[in-house]
Length: 452
Image (cartoon, rainbow, N blue to C red; front, side):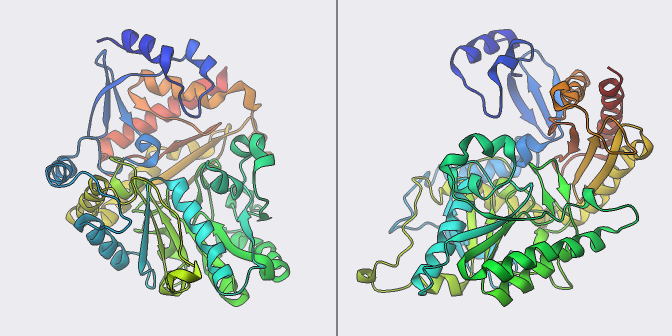
């Protein structure tokens, strides 16, 4: 099999996600034969560092031996059983461990099979909670501008990125939208904390006016990933938790992309205040299984759980299900992933790797076409602009980021951009030498992209 042979077969039958398929006439999909560690290898023998963790999921590398072994053992024991009326050890053990690892008070784990589904669960559970407790007037949600929470209709509705949402607007519920604390927009000389604290006034005003009809506020803690990797200060989460409690509104923390070590702590909510915050719902997926199998979990509290605990005849049960809910193979992958965190002391290792990432792109700080180099833990983003002084963006139709992507592929790196934002979100097993290579590739790619 060659690349060209598989590409021809692919383009006859496959419709790829987040892709204008006409682009494949000049930029066909890259057929991957195998993966090992940070590397992906195609059928012609070309290798690429997976610098974006295959859409932010592959945190411990491809073909990780320990995760492989755990899944193989599970495969010989039990591949699947429905979780309605049945149970199995991997699901129970995973729930127990996540109760211990997530913020205090998150005591119940509800399983689904992808990130969007975890958000759907949280939205429905919050709405249903208020109905069960006699507050049927609460039917709305508050989100942040520039947010993204998935692409099923409920999750899409509480996002705010037009690229994904605008077409489907007539199908969606209408959230209330507070200004994002995104620190890219801070005034000169204003710190991240000062900016995030000041912007919170907009959220406070919305809660004061609409708490009586609001089920929950949903946020991506610290980092709006699909919104061009925009970042904000943890003080915003601290303020938000206090305000949601004061106004009687749930807080949903979408940690699907930012959980499991990506922001510098195991969960981003840990960074708010001295001891972290506990949301009413925490949505987990992506890194949960280290990129092996689809799985998501919505963590919640005993208070929420008890609102559904009732006699059957009262019809208060939470009736939400997926065929592969709590799949044992996926749970086995998640348990092996948690083992890898412990074995490697990964959160502390990531602090050193994060510094390597910062060092690798330090020369870009003064680049005339780089508005900002920003970083939160193991996520680093470089925002290209036409003019640095005014932060004037390039015309999006010029697709400058795509030029960086093409250059990176030619240099053995997968750097899939978000528009004109180039970012590193690599597996945690990456080496300092590999990070340095990514830095050189990004710098070269940006030089080429802005000079055309």
